[in-house]
Length: 314
Length: 314
Image (cartoon, rainbow over all chains, first blue to last red; front, side, top):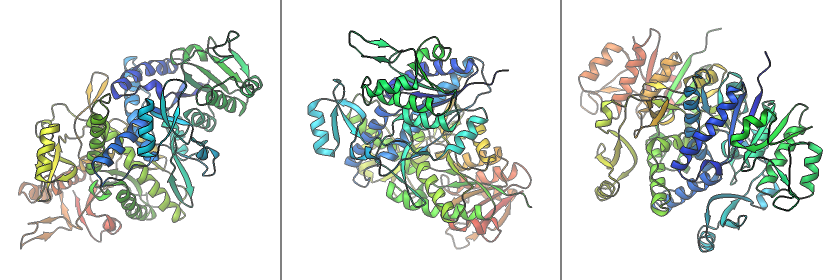
């Protein structure tokens, strides 16, 4: 029998909706696509983003502090932790239900609270770039800047959003636990929201005010778990160069070298397609036989069967 | 070599403080007591309560809904999930740090998001009894009743608190993952806040508006993991009969039968010592050789060495 393919799948926080009812719908659709991969015989590990959710939780904790002065403001790292359970609980239930609906009873689902070490000297701390929370009007943005000292940026013509530092993931603290569960046949949700950002201070792990990019986090996890595939889900079926220009070209199967050249030529938007292609290049170049796939959620299965999506490999 | 003792330890939510700074102090003290047990050669699994924390998170989510009408109210089950990560993240870090400070590097720490199935016909749903959140004055209690429809009760002369249903735990959904991690030598934090309460609806697990008692949850976990000890930590060194009366008597070593008689005689306060003694009786009577210990956090080590605390066994 062929060895089953191990896949780390990176799911966008935006695809999980902005409210709990939206999330509960989204996780159903997500679960169908993931269980499709499991039915193909793949071992799957799920990493998800948390941009809207961690912003929402942060807003809730801030609202509480205003109403109850005995409650100090909650650090962003703690909000990331909370977002892992907020999303993981729903997602693991939807996965369990989809597995059961297809009479697959031997794959338990588990969510691991995961910390991710970052480097305190990471230059990202000097240049906050990761949008979190909901979109704001210019007026709301001004209030948020003045009242909470948030750093606000305009986001791709869609409105204004708070931005926070997004340092590179350096080490998955709970890697051993994740590996043990994956090796024992569990469907594991880990490194949610890119992982809780922590910095090493002697024997202490101190929370960092940051949100780690989930594409980079899933790349690190995929390398550490010796995965065959890293699947980065996004809003388009294939990555394009000259995006939205007359000579736009969709990419099917490209080498790491080609991808690196396109990055250098500036084809991919920072904070959007760029981290996905960067993470893909890093994973694919880490070892022969490793393939990164960027595609739509509902095309994941066709993607690993070579039918669609953009595949990047050595 | 003697087989190492497996211990499930139940930690009170109240002992973890009402705010994050209080929690960060509390988990340090807690971690010292737990690592003491590990240095004695014990395998430890940690269950914690979440009364103040789940109330605080619920208040935060309610405050958000008032400020941002696009955010519907967050179900209590989701708040329990968030409390597992809110507490687990801090607790697992403090445990890791204490282990490292004592040069113990081979015991990784992990927090599992844990769901607990409850029976939808559990009579507890008709009689909310579990206090959550902070204490309120009579005036604040009246506002909370009118404004949010909360059920408020007076709590042992200490003020008014919201009460919610506290059904009995029936099944730990993620038991397989917890067992796998414990068996692989991890120090696991699981069933936080008694577990996320869910009810089985076909293949779906639906969140229940409840908070499960962590003593009963830890008893179930201890049985399922075939633990040797269930340690229930509390605010007194030993359980007493005729508590605060002239003939008060502290209990050292009692049989399940004695404990059952004292329960029947009404010696233990509901919502306080009663669930601890009930959970102890259930665990101790589930199999010969199983011992339940009720004592202070800082006496846990002396307790398992038979020096103090109240021990209950067959």
